[in-house]
Image (cartoon, rainbow, N blue to C red):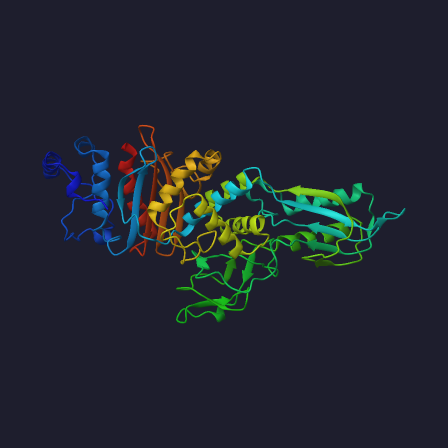
Length: 489
């Protein structure tokens, strides 16, 4: 924790005092609602002017701004932590509550995506294959089944990260059938994927299901939702703002709660049952193309005695590097949860989120992550039961700078003023110099990543705010103000 008196020399205080007597100090950190409020701590306003920068060091400016925020009406009753760290000297430059466990929101994705890169490699791809069993007679009749073999591709049919559309994949599948000389299918189209099985029986702990009118499905199947429009229609009459509930979960018919209902009866989801939709659309297209299918589309998760099969076509997903770039740039929850379950499957042969959590936490332990205060519940950061300390985040991010995939990892992070979820932050100071993952839940705003200083150094930082007052935009402005002088370190 910074100490205001510790870092300011008497000369600096005198010089800044003379300046303050002759000039107006910037108070942009305060909203109009707080303009007339005075701090009982009598702390200085944030120091940002050119004269002050020539009198005080960059480190002193960071410390002063952090101290000032302690009395800021938006943050003074919040629980928040901050640390900026020099990876070369392995020393903390400035900090506040750096050892306090806080809700990290989507900065949780930093842990999930790194684990996937470490375990699977940048060039890992998911495969979705079309195969057939049985024989093809002289008339082109397949007396057997077609198989759609999935591997849990989280981007299947979504157009995310450069993924092909359902239409393009189906076109390739139909082409494979035609090339094999099949003119009729006397059998079924079987969906076979043991990775992402049907409905889950237990909801993830303390998950935020509705944020900014977006409906999040962090895991499981959405068999009854059409991915073509990705909408789940709910009846308005079933809601009550007094009782604070929304609807019955499609997972296990439990009521899902939230603070208030702000929607219009339409909740959007990002996790359709992709293999089922693909297989049904494939059957429809075959029939329209003059290739009748006598059987139906049916799932078959496991097969103790598999038939001999031949491959007709195979679709490769974008690389893991592309998937992670999209995940971090857009803070995509469904992709993050799929990554969690994929590493669980690769390591433990089990597609559940619980296996994924075990794999991620074990990886973090082996990598020397500071586990004190860590509570890793999901891959996306939707759960309010997630906890991590600012100091553990920065030391983790520092350790990655020696990894061979560090460049890919860094590139996946939004850039201040330029890309992803940081495009509207750091448009002035820090534009193009802040590389960080954002996190947002109701009354939670977080930011963690790397900072390129004006002198060319790379620093690592974490800034997490829980239970603040005011709007999220007000918190974002304060975050910018805290980090701005760090650019001169």
